Amino acid sequence: MEGMTRVVRFTVARWMIVVPVTAIVALVLTWGRHLPGAVVVIVACLLAGAVLAAVHHAEVVAHRVGEPFGSLILAVAVTVIEVALIVTLMVSGGPKASSLARDTVFAAVMITCNGIVGLCLLVGALRRRVVVFHAEGTGGALATVATLATLSLVLPTFTTSTPGPAFSPPQLAFAAVASLALYGLFVITQTVRHRDYFLPVGADGTAGEVPVEHAAPPPARAAMTSLGLLLLALVAVVGLAKVESPVIESAVVSAGLPPAVVGVVIALLVLLPETLAALRAARRDQIQISLNLALGSAMASIGLTIPAIALASIWLTGPLLLGLGATHMVLLGLTFVVATLTVVPGRATVLQGGVHLSLLAAFLFLAISP
Image (tube, rainbow, N blue to C red; front, side):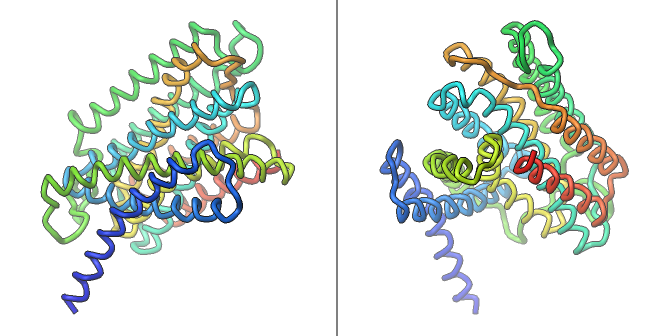
């Protein structure tokens, strides 16, 4: 039995190396080309494989460096490549892509703060009835996400310097600097000054290093290899999502759906690695890691995207629409109110998970039928 287990692990490890490399080769061969239906299906399969590979290598790196660094590495890596995807689509999309950054960032916030958080709370509470986490660290992360979202996605609707839900150049520069400053301050708090607030909660209610598996951390060489393969897999995920985007856009238009649905689909695809990693942590009763991933991803999505878009706007033509409409502002406000009530006690049940998932369902329904 032990020999069989070793064979299975060796096979899985080998496939986790082969899949990202194959996905990158497919990305190079298909980039910028019109694809027939059969190739689209193959690309979709490789995209799914790259997502699974990214989750595997992220867990190897996290096991080596410990928390909260593992969650931070995955969140930042995904977001950096997400930003590149948004900028690429905006450059190639012309004026019709003027709201793509807003739609994608807002979708990422709703998916992480309601979808990932809700799923992980539900999974954890079904196993343990009540899940426990640090209110101090999670509350600080939530406060940062709420501030970033309000500054970047709500205020542009009410400013008067320029027409429409857009910032003037000085306002956009201020939002970019503020986003970077807040994100940098949070990273210092999470990794240096108050790292214990973001560690998993042990059975005795105290913070501590909870191993991902009952095994010694991987050697440094294996962790560096997994880090490289993680970045390779994430490039493949976002690149193949870009390859699939014309099919997605055509399907959205054919179905008569609003253009904002494209941003939702992009966010869903890009956030798949983090979603799977967070769910695996929840199944291991490490809800704090799940919350670190969810809120860290939302924070990085805003804190890195807005400065990048502000810089790219120097070369982009056409307006840059950032402000949300009334319906989306209501959903965003309700999300932060509910999330605050979830976080403050430091404990949650299946009810909180269900409430967050209902908000995600409302967001998805209203994106399809505004």
